[in-house]
Image (cartoon, rainbow, N blue to C red; front, top):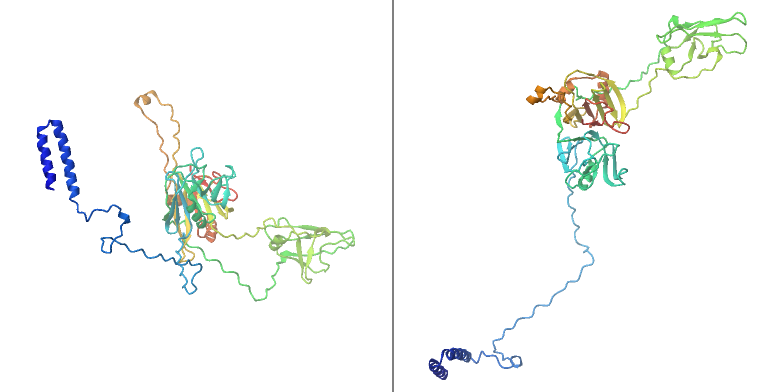
Length: 498
């Protein structure tokens, strides 16, 4: 090591006597020598041999050995279940949430939403897509009149309308479809498929559907005109076990037969009037030729006439009852009696089931009742005059399950749709200069309570309505007539919003 330092010092002395370039080279040479000195100072024990991989390491060498990883154990694949394994317990099923009582479906055009209300109030909500411009969705009071799960449109090239629930026969329905977030249908109300599937199982035929610009909510309502207690049914008549006594016939109702004295003699039979409907009295003639039937009893004893009220309702012929014989049927001039229906006979009413719908029209001045989409009866009503319109109000009945025969009601009042203002009259020059504008404010309709206060319904009609009242029955009060909408065969009352 001392020799290297001596050589380095000699080079430095020589560099001092050389020019600058030679001095630079001397510094490079010094750096190389320094590097060589450092390599030489490395211990020969740590230096790698010439052929590292050819050397055999001694047991005491500083070598690091790693243990081999344990072999991987592959379990056999199971192809069948273990017989003794306990059966998996089924998960408790969630109780399906279903609406209670009658449903009212409220659709808002402005909010593009559909809400369902049941007996407990708000039940469910979903976004919808209604009719676009040029194919707007009609607004008003409707009901579900048809349901078809896999329906196709017969207007728009067989377009699919799954879970279709129709509200008009002109092509408006609620069904599953695409919801782009804005009105995009041809008048129908599109719903998400999941919601349309659930709603299909919730609704029934006749469920009320109300479409308005904004949102309306049914509210609990009570009024003296709305029936809250169903009348008790009349007990059936009890058959009497006592023998029926024969009724006595007045003397004025006895017909006396006059026997002829000669072959060409004629006799006149006069029947006294027995009821106010028999005017004038009936006169029959008989002729004496042999072989002709006179219709009179052969006995010389007087013959009695049965009660006329029962005779007219069963047959048009006159029945003569002999006091001694069993029965004799009288026919004029020997002709055969043919039964004829009484002119005032009333056919027995067919008893129907299901909710009823009542519609009171201010325009018609009548009350209409429908059941199962068919007319039941109608009657004239009295509506108190007023400068305010009735408006359109929908009342829905629900039977109280805790008290049979007791009903609660809810009410929905539809808004008034703004109309175009009528053309103003020709203004004078002074009015135009002053900027005066003639306006006519729209009349404010009555509230639901005020509208019912103006109605007077006959007691007989109220009795028939009370007897047929069930859960889901409804009452609609409106200024419009029954022919203003699409009310017809196979529909409930359809009242457009105007």
